[in-house]
Length: 119
Length: 107
View 1 (cartoon, chains in turn yellow, purple):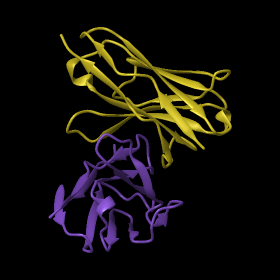
View 2 (cartoon, rainbow over the protein chains, first blue to last red):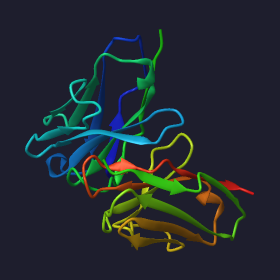
View 3 (cartoon, rainbow over the protein chains, first blue to last red):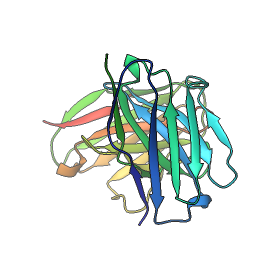
View 4 (tube, chains in turn cyan, green):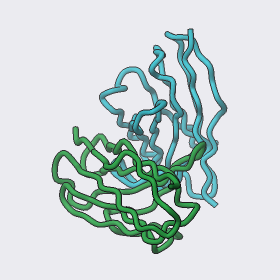
């Protein structure tokens, strides 16, 4: 069955970077896109960006452009997301999710990675 | 960017009740509207895509309706496992945006 398994929780200081992973299994990795969405405490979901695993095309939300980097390791079926210059309000659960295209429903989600930014 | 507004933010209901959640887009999005359910500590799960298409394995007590700017999710015959938070998402234009969520609680 389709699974997206994310890396574990992180605690970071303001100004630091965090790199998290999303390992896919149960389907042909290159046939789908991976999106990153975050959910800060008490806030709505916020779309951060996506990668077309097939052709490597990447798009970021303007909100995160320049501070977020999405990458992939096709041999290992893993997608990564790095967030730089962390701020206190970056404290959130970060989810990866599988979709078809940039504008698509998200039918499979990872379990989430909690990132806590604390002085 | 398109903004999504859900109402109500929360509601209390009893098992067996019929509940309706609404989602309004700041501009017309056709039927590019999806609904998700999220239980505490879990990832969201897709319920309905394209405004009214039930996702695989989702019980038929969930129905979606709407076009343009106004959409609804109805649960007919609320079950104990339906107490959760529900989110809408537009996928008409980038960036894909979510509603703020509606928490369905037990009365």
